[in-house]
Length: 233
Ligand code: HEC
Image 1: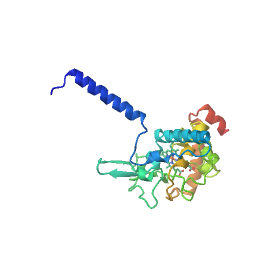
Image 2: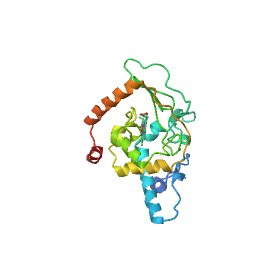
Image 3: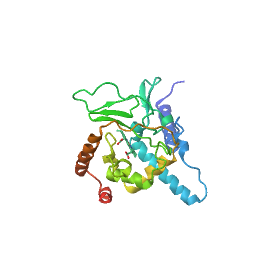
Image 4: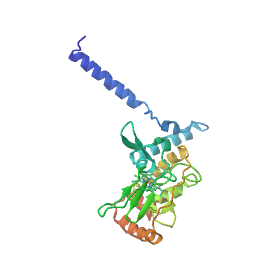
C-alpha cells in the first residue's frame, strides 16, 4: 500500500505525540539514577518539599556538567566513544586509577587522564572529588554550611586552608543562589554512596599557597552575582 501525504502527516503527528508523551514521562536511564529520590514517608508536606529540592539539585548537577568531571568516564566500545560511567555516578577519581600519561607540551594547558577525573596542570596533578554521601570518602560528613562555604570562599572544604584548585569551576558555580546550592547539597546526599578514596592533589606545598593568593586576586575580578557577592563579605 502506498502512503499519500496525508498518511505521512498523520505518521508525523503520531511521532510528535509519542515524542511529547515521552517527554512528559520521567526519562528512564540505564543507570538507575531515577530511583534515587526518597520515598514519601511521615510528614507528606515536608517530604514533598524535600523531594522538590532534590529534583532541583539533580537538575543543576546535570546542567552544571558536574558529571563530566566527577563521574569517571569509560570507553564505550559499542558507541565507539568515551562517556561517563553512571554506575560510578559522581564518585570522583577512581582509587588507584590512572593519572594522565606523558608531559604537558609547551603550549598545552593540561593533560586529562582516561577517566576525565585526573588533570595534570603545569603546577601538578588534581583529582575530582567523590561527591557521593559516603561518610569516609565522600561528602557524608560535610555539613550544608561547609558546602555553601566552599562556593562562597573558594577554600577547600570551606575552611581556612588551601584554595579549591582548577579545573574545578567554582568561580562560575559560586553564582548559584544559596537555595540552589542547598538543593545541590540535598541531591548529592540523596544519591547512592560510593566508597572511593580520591588521592590528594599532587601539588607542591608552596605552590598551593601561591595559587591561593593568585586565585583570590583572580576571583576579585571575576563577575559575581549580587547575592553571592554579599554573602562572601
Ligand atoms: C572541569 C571539571 C569539573 C567540573 C565541571 C566540576 N568539578 Fe567539582 N571538582 C573538580 C576537581 C578537579 C576538584 C578537586 C579540586 C581540588 O582538589 O581543589 C573538584 C572539587 C569539587 C568540590 C570540593 C571542593 C573542595 O575542595 O572543598 C565540590 C563540592 C565540587 N567539586 C562540586 C562540583 C559541582 C556541584 C559541580 C557541578 C555544578 C562540579 N563540581 C563541576 C572538577 C570539576
